[in-house]
Length: 235
Image (cartoon, rainbow, N blue to C red; front, top):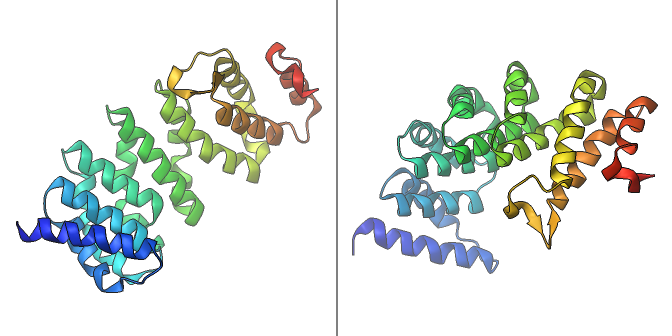
């Protein structure tokens, strides 16, 4: 058995120890090393361990920045997905400028899973450093109109936060949000979004929350939503 494969097995056991409440801090540096080296499966275990062991303020994460940047630029779809996943979960605030341009590029990637994960990564960046993503709001709008419903759904997380903070700046999106809600309620999304035959219930709730913020100070917008045939139950 190779050293990297042994380390992968040890890391799985370290994760289990932490799940049971025992500290396995001795393995943290090895989780970083496993994410940096080895096969795709070994890197996957390393990234998983890092995301479970560390937090955004941990100094160990600084050792992972170059690895994340390299994997984001990889031609291997799995490596790109792993890097975007760890970025969307935890990443040092000070290191965001180093990878932000690469994450932005992924918004136009031909694979929808990459675009979706890129949107979620940018959402994370917005939560911890909003000033650093102010210049890409136009790209958020493109994500909202993405042909893949998963990418569109991911963009709603960002818009819920943006509209909650400043609804006046996004009044022009009311019609788009109502249209999306009509499509969701009308069963236009893939069946994968259904839950017990209900079309995307969590997405419906999120859209209703967005529309509530948009119409908070404007009775006209409330009327548009309430008067829609599918939404009469709001009254």
